Image (cartoon, rainbow, N blue to C red; front, top):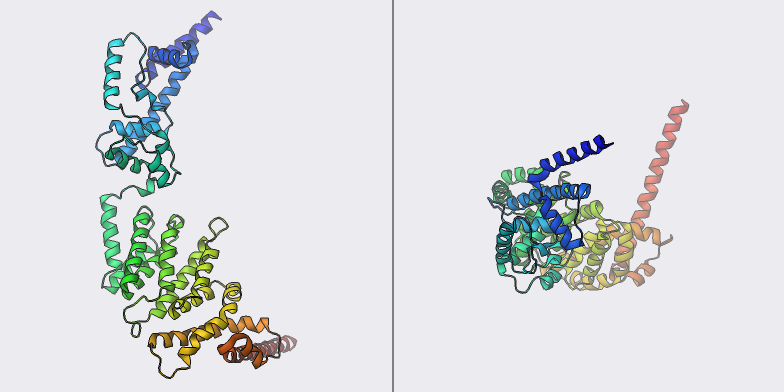
Length: 441
């Protein structure tokens, strides 16, 4: 038994020698434990603590090196170690002025080290503001130390950023500039190549924060400036990213969705509406919005109800182009959206477009053209639903009384839908009869 315990003690001593260079000394651990818990650790307990400290030190060093690389530093500095300590929830009171090292064998070295630490890091650090990564920017501003210098607050903002938001490498920055300039350039062949790259390249993931911000801000500017061509190029970029299965867009929908909706329902998206086909741009953007909803809508984010509410509010706008864009958007959301949002607004929309359709010469050619497109779109999307809402036979006066100016046109469209259904049924019956006859023969 004595030999056994001697073997254990020898192995512990060997382990201690092995980890001695990567952890605190036995005397330091004993003094620290005496200060914090009032007892001195001995035997196997202090060996276990030393191993734990060694693991923590290793993790802290690795984290500090990572942060040094992210901040483009060639050396690991004290600020990097502070960040690593915060990441592992290590109490920074050890670095504060009010800490006193206990006396030990290395008293002189310890005191000198303590003075250096006190002199350099006398400023109290607000650990909650660094750990609280889920805090809002306002809350982080309130919890930031008021006596901290500006350079520390700037570093704190970097600490709060996730890995995906750290600055791009030089090569990635050059690629970002190249891809954006090419997609927005004047050469259509090179633009097609760049868009194709956006549709399959998996290396775009680190650039998505900057790329999505670029698209969102560019749409804002070009909607105000009514730059039709650039808005079209931006929507093509969104579409290419959307079909790219190698990147994840979930975290950037708050930038993509407003940009696409702006191209769909804005009052005017081009400087020359009589020449430029902004109607096609609105429909293209509505198709992209429908694909975004189909891909990313869930119970957690409720994208579809929010988008439908925006389209629904657009139907009550005084701008005919906004009404047209909202109608297109709702038609892409499905029959339930059309029945719940469009059908109840048909009479009000009829009253708005009537004044432009009944005049021989409209004061605004854009409004007259928009009224024509709105009527065509309403008839196309509403007739299949009204066919199921109204029992045959259809009565013209009933449609006119309920839907106003468009009542007569809707009546004709519903009647045509019923005729087409009868024709399709007859053709299907003839095909079925022919197949049965062929089988019998």
